[in-house]
Image (tube, rainbow, N blue to C red):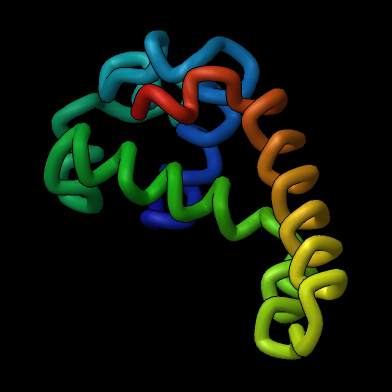
Length: 101
């Protein structure tokens, strides 16, 4: 068992069933272990949610984020903003409960 595996499974539950269905018991069931054993790797549900959100936001295209470092004109800024907004919207559609976490 690893934090990465736990977060990956939690992210999957969040995406397919919503954040409201994500709890340590449900996660342990999917991982084939007991809920208390998860606390050896994740301190609390808020820590789990934080790790899941970080993993989700890691899906944002780094190229879109990096464009902001190279912006020199208003038009370039607008294009970069559009790209990151579109990427964010895609994530929010995949994880509809994300804004409420």
